[in-house]
Length: 143
View 1: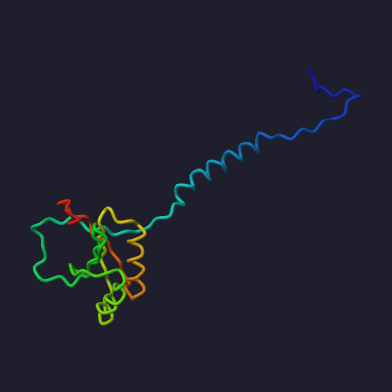
View 2 (view 1 turned 60 degrees about the horizontal axis):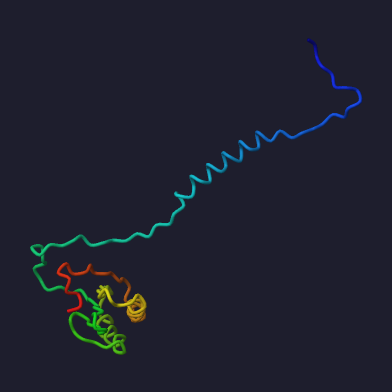
């Protein structure tokens, strides 16, 4: 019942105790797993509220709207314009304006590349803010 001494003919062995190291690794794993959802990057976007027909503004609007029609044409405030003359038309509109804001409205069949090219042309002419208008609720975007 006393203290047991090792046999005199055996060498003492040293084995590392890995249980505390495993505990630390598990705690670190949990910490890193909790940090991943918190590290997501966020892009702020302002979406206009859905407007009703009875809340139309009273005066004429001074907003500039670039519309990419379903048939492949472009319009600025319902005025037809070609892709080659977009640059000149934007300069004519925005050179004397203090607020350089453009709204883009695209038909669903227009490609992402076409919308980006139109936005690049607008940025090159000095447009500072580009917004997107929501699709028509009537579903006649191509007309």
